[in-house]
Length: 296
Image (cartoon, rainbow, N blue to C red):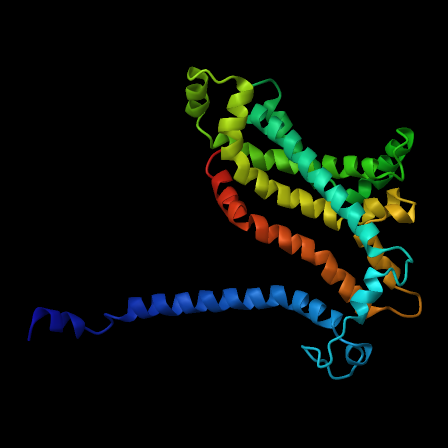
């Protein structure tokens, strides 16, 4: 009997491999379960959006509509309740989201470069305040911000609401981008300076391409912050033509009844831009999140 045969015949030899295999299967199963639990509400929302009212209020729930219809989408897109076109709300929401993403990313990048590259007085205090600001509940700031916008004559305006969104997005973006900037070696900037590049050229040709994944990652949070926000928009806006998509949803909730079909259709339409944005930047987002956690 050979030595290999003796080793293979030893009891318990395959137990570590079996445990490893069982652990891998268990983790994969747990991941699938978490995925199903996370995706199921979205699936049910989209499925209900295509169901006729008879199936929505049926005592026997059906995961997939047997007689799909586009009536709910037609009702929402044509302003069936608010008498205002869906595209008016969509225009306001996408405008606020894009302004928030562009301005907050620019301000946060400049501030993150200053924090990561320079040592100045109260630098640590500034970083701590960035975290403290994010702990303040948004609801506690509604009245102060309302009074401030009223004094500045920016109440009931989209620019005023954009300023509020930018103010909430910038602290988190600075904290995130600080790690990305710190991960870029200073030697690259020094090499660009030796080659004759000025500060502006160094910023656009060296720093910006390397920090781009971080900008993508932080822009997603800024986009979602402005896209899904309801409290400030509902409080600060009084003109129906300036309402955003989250405000539009509350029109479908009545005192005596609730239009679940249009609500699900509107919610599905509200989700599509976010999913599309994720699909466009998902690769850079993953690389950016991992890169930003390396240093800083």
